[in-house]
Amino acid sequence: MARVAARLSASGEQSSHPVDEVLPLPKLALYGFQHVLAFYAGAVIVPIIVGSALKLSPEQLVYLINADLFTCGIASIIQAFGVGRVGARLPLIQGVTFTAVSPMIAIGLGAGGGTAALLVIYGAVITAGIATFAFAWLPAKAFRAVMRLFPPVVTGTVITVLGIVLIPVGLKDAAGGAPTVADGGVPTQLAYAGGTMLFILVLMKFGGPFLRSIGILLGLVGGTAVAFLLGDAEFGDVGTSDWIGVTTPFHFGVPKFEWFPILLMLIVMLITMVETTGDTYAVGDIVGKEVDSETVARALRADGAATALGGTLNSFPYVAFAENVGLVRMTKVKSRFVVVAAGVFMIVLGLIPKAAAIVASVPPGVLGGAATVMFGMVALAGIQTLGKVDLKEEKNALIVGVSLAFALFPATVPAYFDKHLSADLSSLLNSGVTLGASAAIVLNLVFNGLAEDDGRTAAPAEVLAETLAEALTGHAVVPAQPAVAPAAAEKGPAKGAAKEDAAEDASAKDASAKDGEAKDGAVKAEAGEAAAEEADEAGAPAV
Image (cartoon, rainbow, N blue to C red; front, side):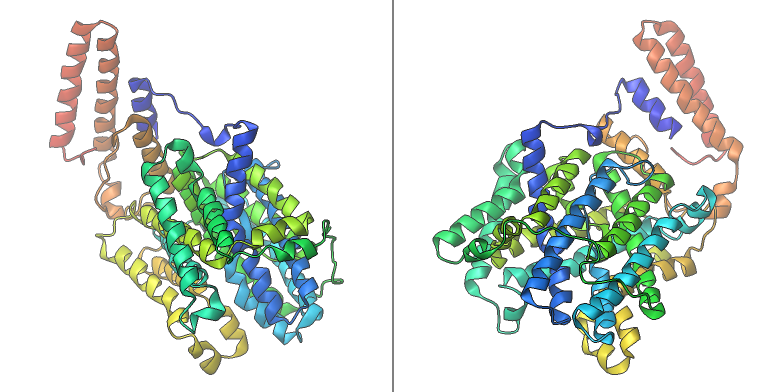
């Protein structure tokens, strides 16, 4: 860290924090609305799936969607803007986690379905949210000890798994929606998906910076306009929807607290903590802001608070949404206040069913085309995180490869869980994210353990510092190092110190030379080079 700062200082570069920049109101509104459209499908799919499985009425289903959007808005503002020591203050959108879908359906069906099932689900959600919030307030030492379960090889794998598992969701929408997939999909919807993707890619290739930054939004608007002109976009539900729909606490009744649903939801929240940890590091890398254990703790506190609030306001568990991490990377709009604006839009959508009905009128093909691009970028974000891991090390390669295999098992053999496992185990394990994340954590413990000086993976803070320095200076200032065993990393601290001192001396003489002290600078250069040569001869690794 000190070496990176010294190099930046010597080169005259100044660190900036665009993540904290407040953009003009029109841009905030436009970029914020793009985030809403990018995550809208993922936001509403969970209440739709859960509500349909529990046989809720159409009116109850609409209420669930409105409650979800309303709470998403509040949760996103808390995460991006920050309230005290709650919220990462990064451009992270909060949405209902897909990991909780199967467990919540199992809990609800076990409770008999209908609104009675929702009360049991909400009791488990509130308890799990409070537990997550409390966990993130552990003393720094204890919290860091737990976070050592999630080095880059784990977080990178989990983000990659999320993208891979989500891509089929986008493709099913592109084919016309999940019910049509078994019949081969709808060709016209696939055409809309392809056209939307092509339009977005053309904008990204040939458009200016501003057009590229709103490429997803323009793709959705343009695709919907074309579908409307061809008679495939219907806005009839807008006229029959209410103008105002206020979400009130415990709308369906007082929650019920039962031990097994609570245990199941606690396990779900353990998985979502991995998701949020990975997303926090990924978006910190993208926006050039260092993420430390306190930043992760603030992000998890926001998760816990949002989840407890969700159970109170008739919604579900919340997590930092990986889809929007991909949007930040694509658009390069790094301001966290864009997410605050998106949160305001979501609150409005949650209060005005007519506005939600307009957004819901986007044809599935158009939505699927844009979503597939976004989900692919999520997987890429995970791959980039894994790029900071030494995958030439066989143990790390096995962790990634086997975890991906586990993640794909539920989608490959879905009937196995229902036919060969109990309902409780099936609800817990029938999730690619759950299996993939669990496998990554366990395999990392088996192969890498929790050694203090494990040299097989770089510390996340160091990796982010190197990335920031490279982004600011335009070249790699700290080359990647080969894997080093812990014992080797501990050898010769004096050699490493001599080498680092030599580098600092070299930086000092360069600065002096620029000030016109050429003679003194030359002397110092020779001294620095001599010290470096001595360090190399002593066996210090190249830096």
